[in-house]
Image (tube, rainbow, N blue to C red; front, top):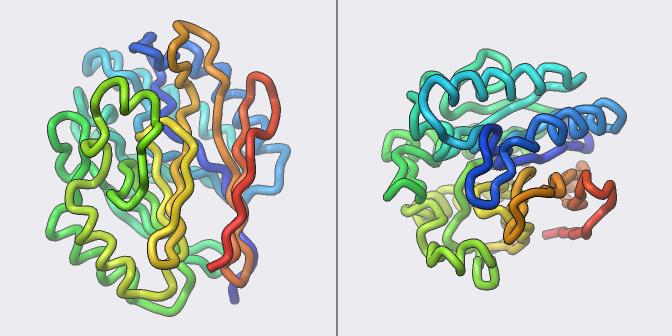
Length: 270
């Protein structure tokens, strides 16, 4: 039986030292505040969309990853994560595995009658920044989306090529538009469209709020928790909530923690 599902979505925490405009040194208080919000809200789970750390060196990256896990462990609900490109720049993919928060590089979780599918879009990383989904993982995805008639949500770090990035100030400044997505997005989308029960694809990586749809599948980009573009301090702590009702209607609210306010809302019903 399908019941409404409520998720808190957060991405690109970039815990660690300041890196460009990514306020890694502000990540801990922001994450503590987010956990407090989660524990005082109606929420079934937290989905963390990769890039937990600002890369420095293997020793520091391991320590920062451990701190992020510890902070998330204070949540009263499950936390599920995917790999981001920064998570494996100095670390092995295996270093990111955790029996509770990331049991495998790609996996599925059943919640309230929904199937949540977690992809590894760093399989491998392309030119230090872009994503890819390997042939074996594509075969796994085919089975995951077709195994039953449950409504499905798919999560990955990188965006799909169908998600427009024109106007994204960071990607435009760094001349990265076209490199931000899963390189073989067409193959991924072909599989997702083979099953009419796929409701949404949800990603981080691009550090801005974005919504689009592709042939009935909602495509949702979650902003970075610590991005403070054009400023060297003062990240606003962006995140969002996702409500999906039993009929597949989606309601997204984007928030900031500094100041504590709602930034916008998107509703979608295919």
